[in-house]
Figure 1 (cartoon, rainbow, N blue to C red):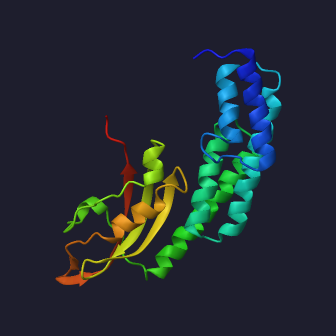
Figure 2: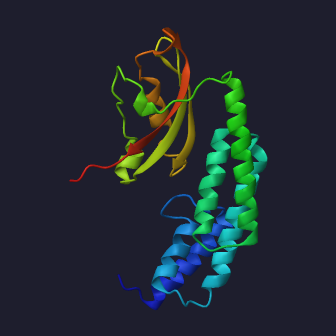
Figure 3: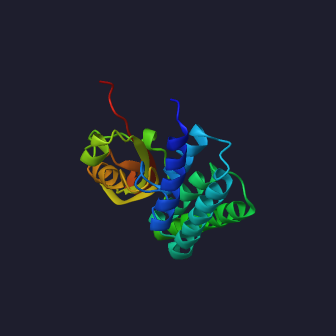
Length: 217
């Protein structure tokens, strides 16, 4: 698609406006991040682009820092910080970005350690090594369906000695805030053949990536 000068100026103006409003990455197609990327495509040599890219990235890093400060090992905040940093990375490298990615890694390691402690050191197994007794049945969120959004959610959970699913948590998602509820609801309805050790049913933890894909029309 070819853009004229008025389109390019509009992208720049909209990016500034959305940034001032605090709409950094959301709504997906009406945010500062979205319009900066539109301008990068339409006019990569635009004189106002470098300053706008820097301003948007700095705000994204600020939001990531806030999420990490608030996280304290909470998966939702870590997912939010990780998604924001991944998008900030697409705008270019920076020392602040590297430092925050290091913080994210440490926070995830800490969260993984806490999760292991909370399960009493339960064995983690690959989901495809388990035998499902119920299929995974997804309900595509109506808002995402209407906007033709696709994505995925990584879910962590425990399978009890009776094969029931408990402690369902969204660990990571892309995009964030769209499919987590539908994915956790679907996984919570699963059941499995109990895992045994030395003939005794045991509880295990596992993970699954739930994908939401639109079927071709």
